[in-house]
Length: 345
Image (cartoon, rainbow, N blue to C red; front, side, top):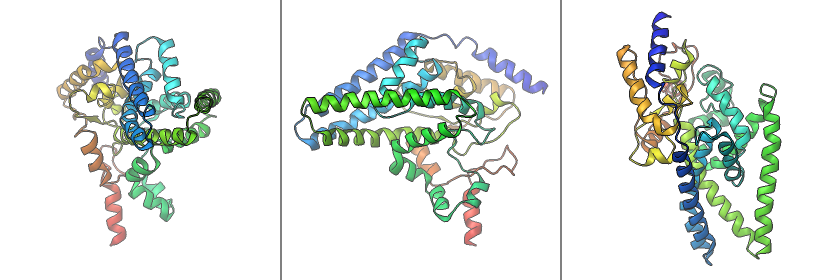
């Protein structure tokens, strides 16, 4: 315990000056992404050809995905540090895509508390070995091809439904979820109702809007599902110290220049989980310092993956299960592969 206490002290000392926020950086990121997204939306709706219009919708959806990621910072109040702005800014851009950001905000707090130690974690995507053994044949098929089904088939709609279901299931644990479910429902009805009324009054095609929304949903869904999987998949383990354990149950990623700005520093996800109050523009510095402290204490280094696309392709080919009977320090990434080999034998 003495070594853990010393490690924690050194980690907190190394990062204690990184919590100061520059609200204008977050506001600039939110504004640039928002204006860029709306510009492409304008291009899409200004084209008479439906095919050309939908073609312009793809880049709008890609930028929209990064704009929506700002809502993650807003939930932590690290987008600008202005609580009122962070709370209000996330809602309209989320409700436009039927994303229940209020429910997500409450579930995400539970996720930070339960990641790696409580299987009720609302953002857990990895099945346990017990769940797999007890599953039906079609569910076992789903687990084997889970990445492709969620990223390419379920997409954004899958994430939306999953968030609503988890919110409903956990509302007795976290009563504030009931209030957020009501607010999200009202906000979505108001937002979508206003858009549909505007389209009908301007004699636009309602079918055009439905197709436009679906193209946005498909594009955004791939980005958000990929991020959702890569952050923790294959890294579940229950360590003795929750904060230190977050450094090993979350994945960092190498990304090209500029990508870190687009995702709000979430490619340093292990550091974010251990120190969620550090703003996105300080996470790179925090990563270097934390890694140095771990080396100084002869601890294993944090996991660093090979970028979003390459790491996703690699992990999708080797589905993983959580085996709670194994030593928590062992990797679980080959558990399902080994199980399938046994079944075939």
